[in-house]
Each structure stands twice: as C-alpha cells, then as structure tokens.
Length: 268
Image (cartoon, rainbow, N blue to C red; front, top):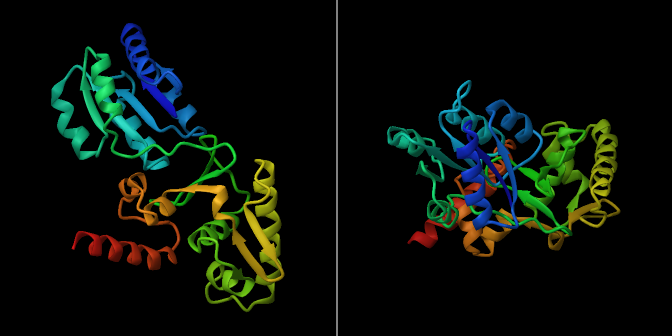
C-alpha cells in the first residue's frame, strides 16, 4: 500500500505522517510539503491513498486531487483542513473522506477503515490489472509502460476474454476495425506480440501470455484483476465497479452492458 501525506506546515505534516504510520506501519508513506513535488512524484508512481491539506499556498489540495484523479481514478483522496466549509467541495469531488485539524489517530483510523475505493494488494508474482475506468496495468504500484498503444490494447482484449483463446483474425478485427484483412495488420500483429512478450519479460512476467499457432490467451492465474473479482462476487470487486469498463476502448461497451445487466439482476 502506497500513501501520500501532504501539508505545507512542517509540524502538521509530521503529526499527519505519524498518525498514518501508526495505523499502517507496513505501508509505503511519502510525505510532501510542496504540491508540485506531489504531482512530480505521482506522475510516475501510483498511490492508493492521498491525505491532502486543502490550503497549501501556491496550489490547493483540491487542485492536486483533481490531477491525481485524472491519472488514477481509483485513488482514495482524504482532505485535511482546518476549515469545515470545504466539506461540500470534498463531497462533490467524491473524495473518500474529510478530516479537520488537528488530525487524530482515531480520525485516520476511521478514514482508512472506510475507503471509497478498495485497495488492491499487489502480489509480487502477479500483474495487477485495473479494468474499471480506464484499463491499466501495475507492477509493484507502478503503471506498466508500453512502447505501443496497440500492445496495451492487445493485452486489454485478452484480459477481457478471461483466458479464452483468441485467433489472430479476431485480434486483428478488434485492433484494426474495418481493415482487419489488410496484409499489413498481420505483420503488425506479430510485432505487437513480440512487443508484449518483451514488455512482460522486462518485468519478470514470462508466463502471463500463452501463445500457440494462431492462438493467443492469458493465464488468468497470473494476474490480480478488479473485473475478475467482480465476476467472482468478491466484495472488493463489487465496490470497485464505478459504471465504467475499459473506457478508452470502444469494444469494451459490450462487456459493460453485460456488467450492468448483472447488477440489475442482483438488485432485483
């Protein structure tokens, strides 16, 4: 678990960090007094929770939170302030929580026990995959970098198929809608395959992608996935669903409709 704590007042920051560390001694905690340093750090490092002072001088904690939400829609934002009038803003932003200064250990304990978005614990021998919202892949809390957008989309579609084998023709039809029969797409698909293998191998995941002649799949036992947790009926998966599924890919709308149907049946 990775947690950001931020306050531009040194003593307040120290108290906040101590309170969080007391409740989560095994968490990785990153303390900041400058909002720009928060954004510089968070651009490269995904965190699960951010305790943000609202009034931090050159840039407000609210503005920091807006940017963090763009990068990581499922991050839990907990605002910290001496002024109760910001409560409405926190609610409007769908923040996970709101505490007033001086922050106590009890306040921190309550907020950590009632997070809006469940924290998916990374397992070192598995990829962590997020399907709700935009599709993304994490390794030890860091977003996995792909050289090509189509390589990432290829992995996303294989995750969507949940271990079922997919032919090269099906992949080409999904990745290049309308031009799947073009000879160039067949060649490019082989490039994407090599790129995906190389990307996963670089992070030590050599057995996630399963391939044979004209067949592609993933080993679902090698990943941790909010979508899979949802289908399995796990509470953390159900809480994670926010009405969006692989939002950057148009083909994701099909499964999104199935998820909505599943939710409607459960409510009935």
